[in-house]
Image 1 (cartoon, rainbow, N blue to C red):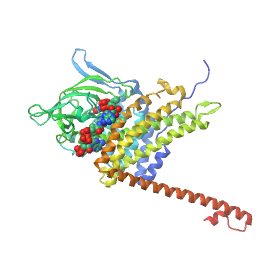
Image 2: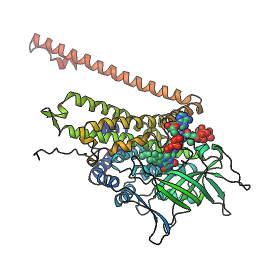
Image 3: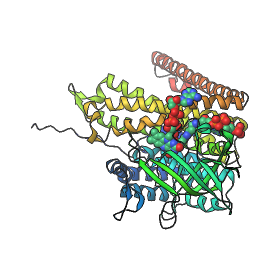
Image 4: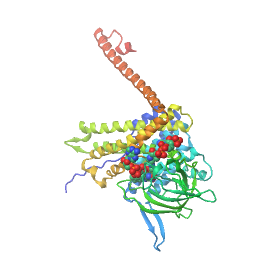
Length: 504
Ligand code: MFK
Ligand code: FAD
C-alpha cells in the first residue's frame, strides 16, 4: 500500500497572509480607521479559517432540497437547507456583513471595510455570499428610494446585526422568455387591490436563495381594462415578503429546485406567483431604472467573489507548493511552477485593485463626497470589472486546479467545486455581452463624459507611475553614485569621507 501520504494544502488567515491587501489598506485608510479595521479583519480572518470555511464546505456536501407535500398530501413547498447554511446566516448578521455598509461608522471608508471583509469571506462562505449580495442590493434600493412605509421595517431587518432579526432578500427578475432583455421578457402582472397593495401573477424562472425572507421583483401593472404596457417602460418594482409569520408562502408555489452545474449550495428555484401580495416601491414604469441600484451592488459583489476565489486557490496552491515534492525538490523551488503561480497572482492583484477602487468610489458616493468624475467612474467601472473579473476567475481557477495535478480534479479534495461555482460569475447578474452593452449605455447616457472621466483618472495614474519610475531611476542613480564614492574613498584611504557620508 506504500508508506507515503501527501500532506494536504490548508488555508491560513486570509488577512494575515495577504500583504498586498494590508499594503492597500495602509496606503489608503486614515490611521485611526486602519487601526480598528485591521484588528477586525485579523479577528474575522481567524474566524473564516476556524469556522466559516468548514460551514461553507458542509453546504456543498448537503445541498438544499424541496419538500413539496407533507405526509398528509398538503402542498407545503418547504425548502430544506442544512444547519450550516442557517448558521452562516447568523454569522453574517453577527459580523455585520451587510450592516457595516449602512451604519457608516467609518464614513466613506465603510464600504472599503465591508468589501474587504466580504473579500476574506466569499470564497469560504459556501455561496452564502449570494444571498448577502442581494440583501445588500435590496438595502441599497430601499435607501435610494427612501426608507418609509413597509420598507422601513424591511430596511431594519436587512441591515440588522441581530441574527434573530436579520433578513435576506431575493432578486426575482428572470422569466422563461429571458433574463437579459427583462424589459421585453417579463410577463408577470400586478393587480392593484383596494388597500393600495398589489397581487402578482406570473412565473419567475430563476430565483436564487429562495429561502430569503423578502424579495424585490418586477411586474406590469394591469389597468382596469386588464391591459398592460409592454416593454421596459411597462415595468414597476415591487417589494414582497416571501412568507407570513407562520412560514406559509405568500401566494408563491415552488415549482422545483434547479439542477445546476455549480452553486449547488444555493437553493435556486422556479416560482409561480399566484396572487403574491406585494407593495409597489418605484414609480409606475420605473422598475428597471429603480432595480438598477440593486444590479450595481450585486455586480460589485460578483467582482468581489471573483477576486476572492482567485485568492483562495492561489493561497492553497502556494501552500501546496511548499509541501509537494517533484523531481527531488518542492514545487516552490521549480521556477516554471512558480512562474505559473506568479502569473495567477498578477491577475489577482490587478483584479483586487480594481475591486478596491470601486469600493472606494462607492463609499464616496454614499457619503455625498464623490465628485462628478468619481460618480461617472463608478458607473463605468462596475460593468467593466464584473465582466472582466468573471472571465479571469474561471481562467485562474482552472489554472489553479492544475497546480494540484490530479488531486485538483478530485471531488473529495473540495477543490473542483471552485471551478463549477466560478462558471456562473459570467452569467448571473448580466452576461459578459450584456455588461459590454451596459458599458456603452454608461458612455452614451453621460454623452461621453464617463470616458473623459476614465481618461483623466488614467492620466493621473500614469503620471503617478512615471513619478515612481523617476523615483526608482533616481534611487538607482543614487546607489551607483554611492558605490562609486565608496570605491573612491577606498582608493584615497580611510582619511577621506565615506561614500555614505558624501551621498548624504
Ligand atoms: C456572489 C455575488 C453575486 C450574487 C448573485 C445573486 C444571484 C443571481 C441573481 C441574478 O442573476 S438576478 C438577475 C440579474 N439580471 C440582470 O443582470 C439583467 C441583465 N440585463 C440587463 O442588465 C439589461 O441591460 C437591462 C435589463 C437593464 C436592460 O433593460 P432596458 O429596460 O432595455 O434598459 P434601458 O431602457 O437602457 O434602461 C432603462 C433604465 O435603467 C434607464 O434609466 P432612465 O430611464 O432613467 O434613462 C437606464 O439608464 C437604467 N439602467 C439600466 N442599466 C443600468 C441603469 N442604470 C444604472 N446602472 C445600470 N447598470
Ligand atoms: P439570455 O438572455 O437568453 O441570453 C443568452 C445569450 O445571448 C447570452 O450569451 C447573452 O450574452 C446573449 N445575448 C442576449 N442579448 C444579447 C444582446 N443584446 N447582444 C449580445 N448578446 C446578447 N435571475 C434572477 O432574476 N434571479 C436570480 O436569483 C437568479 N439566479 C440565478 C442563479 C443561477 C445559478 C443562474 C445560472 C442564473 C440565475 N439567474 C437569476 C438568471 C440570470 O440572471 C440569467 O440567466 C442571465 O441574466 C441571462 O439570462 P438568460 O438565461 O435568459 O439568457
